[in-house]
Amino acid sequence: MPLVGDTIFALSSGRPPAAIAVVRISGPRAGAALEVLAGRIPKPREAALARIRGAENDIIDEALALWFPAPHSETGEDVAELQLHGGRAVIAGVLAALGKIEGLRPAEAGEFTRRAFENGKLDLTAVEGLADLIAAETQAQRRQAFRQLKGLLGERSESWRARLIGALALVEARIDFSDEADVPEDLLGPALATAKSLHAEIGQALADAGRGERLREGLVVAIAGPPNAGKSTLLNRLARREAAIVSPFAGTTRDIIEVHLDLDGYPVTLVDTAGIRETDDPVEREGVARAKVRAAEADLVLWVVDASAPSVRVAADGEKQTVWTVRNKIDLGGQNDLASNKNEYPQKNESLFIKNEPKFKSVDKFFDVSAAKGTGLENLLKALSQHAENYLGGGEPALLTRERHRRVLQNAHAALGRALDEENGGREDILAEELRSAATALGKLTGRVDVEDILDVIFRDFCIGK
Image (cartoon, rainbow, N blue to C red):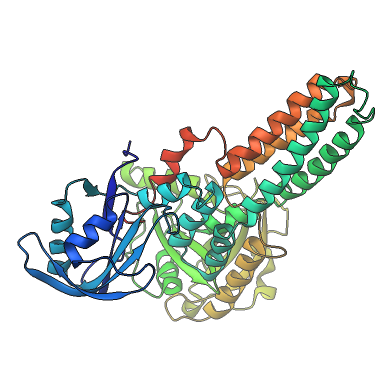
């Protein structure tokens, strides 16, 4: 566990070499460190040109030095920042010089942000938003993360919590001062009205079908089907690079291959799976088993079949996935007119299972393509983009973006439901206890109460220097 009084330092910019490197220092000895390296402390929040010297008083670099005295800094502590030339030798020299100053040590992963949280600069939902902003790969993910960083959920939660505390105060006043003449008789009525309103608002936030969590994770699309149907060729064509090995021999793909795409701002993960068939090869058999599991977990399945094969059959009508049939290799003599080949496809919700193939909910779309030639892929990509937008986007910005948010609000919602339960018979002590439980749950959302057990989990995914 980091020591609170330590002064920490780290490279806060990207991996060298780079045009500029940023080294950040935070803690009570940040100013002393800046004086040692730069020879002086510049005016607060004004960049000053300085010669940065090492332990042997040799000049390491000429850089910009900035000074942010507490509490007006990102971490709430004294913070110094050096903007250096981004060469490896320059960075190594500065970090080595800082390491020789008494009271300084290298920062741990996420320690700057953790200090900002502990000093009240960020609440826990903003910290999670910052982590998601750093990890964002698409515009939609970036927008969602930035909204969280700027308090979309945190401010709403604090507003709910303030109203809950107000309602709780009314109930406790009724319990503690019921004999006082100046205490109004009807204190429970306004408290119950507040609880009812909050129960409805939180319930509405929970009824968002998990859009925020889905956007963080992205749409998962499994490319599945029988062996040698061209699944890996299709993956490479959609990814616009050679991500998977392509071979004319069935059973080449043994393990799961994943490729991350940005489709019109929405994150999509394509998963290439082993061809599903009976096999005596133990390695291929394991690949087939994994393929079935991955297909069952995917949000969308592209069931790829060889259009040039004598019989084309499709799995349908099973658990929960949507499946699109992709008839590949139409350049090799497959029928390019779906209407003339209807008997080879099941109708929606019709059961048609091939032995050992996974079961899917329904066959919703059909595409004729040649992955080798690129024919028909534009329509497939357009449909994938639209599906990603419908699945991940739409409507108001998502308030909940993590499973943690959902669990906390579910607990608050349940407590409010119990507070409003008529079976309590209007007992003031039960009402007060349930309102207190709901307020405590909301406090956990922003990190106001009892969050030590989750802090290490959240901050371990941050990079060093942030």
